Length: 452
Image 1 (tube, rainbow, N blue to C red):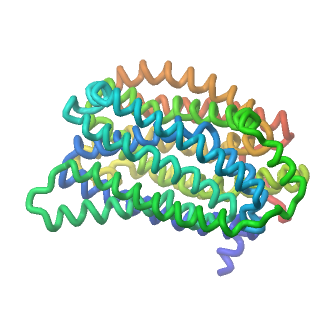
Image 2: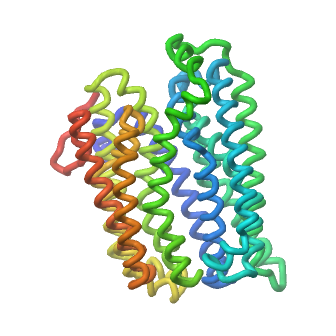
Image 3: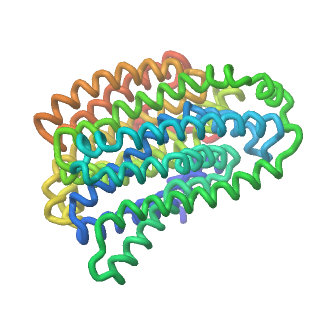
C-alpha cells in the first residue's frame, strides 16, 4: 500500500480515480478483442480476419466523415454541465440539432458507400465477392454514428465508465460471444459470420445508447447552474456551431489521413492477410496506449475547465497527466517492443513474421507517451486552428512517406509511416503548446510534479 501511495502521490483524486476506472475497462476490452482475434485467426484464417478488420475500418471511416465535428462540440460544451450530470434545456436543444444533422450526413454517406460498394470491394478487399461486407457496413454506419455522439455526451456528463463500456467492451464482447457460439456449435461455420457479428453487436449497442441518451435529456433541468454557459449555448445557431466544429472536424479528418489511411494504402498494395498482420501488430502495440487514451478521456474535459480557472491549475493538470502517460504507456511500449516475437506468436506463426512491424509501432508509441496529449490540449484551450494546421502538414508528409514505404516494404512500410507521423506531429504540437501556454508537456523522469 505504501508503494501504491508513493506512485500516485502528486496527482489529483479526480484524475487518478477517472484514469483507474477507464483503464480497467479498456484493459478488459483489449483482452476481449485479443481473444476474438485469436479465435478468428485460428478458425477462419488471416484473410477472413483481414476482411473483418477492413469492414470495421470502413464503418469507422464513414462514421468519422459523418460526425462533422459535433462529437467534439458535444464534449466541449457538455463538460460544463458535468458536475450536475444533467442536460439543461438550452444544451438539449443544441444537442438534438447536432445529432439530427450528423445522422442525416451518415445516411448520405451510407447511400454513397452502397453505390460504390463494388469498387471498394475490388480495390481494397479480396475481390467483388466482398461487396456484401461493404453493404453490411453501409447499414451499420448510422447506428455507429449515434453511438459515437452518445459516448461523447456520456463522457462529458461524467458517465465515463458507461461511455467506455459502450466504446471498448460491448461490441467486442458481443462479437466474441456470437463467433465463439458458431465455432462451438456449428459444424462448418462460414467466415461471413465474423463480419455479421459486428453488425449485430453495433445495433445492440445502439439500442442501449438510445435508452440512456433519452433518459439523460428527459431528466435535464430547465436552466444550467451557470447562466453564462446557458447564454453561450443559446447563441449557438447551426451556422455558429459549424463554425466551431469545422476546425475540430478538419483535425479529425487529418488525423485519419495520417494514421487510419495507412490501412487503406496497405490494402491497395497488399492482400487482406498482410493487412491483418499490420492490424494485429497495431492492436498489440496499442495495448500500451490504453493508459494514454484513458488519461485523455478523463483529462480533456479537465483541460477545458481548468483553462478557464487559471494558468496554474491548467499547468498542474497537464503535468499530472503527462507523468502518468510517460510511466504507464512509455514503459509498456518498451516492453512490447522487446517481446514482439513471442507476443505475436500467440496469434499464429504467420503473425509472428511481422515482429519487426510491432517493434517499429512500439517505438512510435513511446514517442507518443514521451510528448503527451498536445493535440487534445490545443482543442480544449482554443488552439484547434493550430492543431488543424499541424495535422495538415503532418498528414501530407505522412502520406508521401506511406506511399513509398508501403510499396517498398509492405506492412513494415505502414509502420514506418506511422512512426514518422508520431514523431513529427507530437514534437511540433509540444512546441506550439509551449509557445501558446508557456507549458512544457514532455515529461522527464527527474522532473518533479508538485501536489495541488
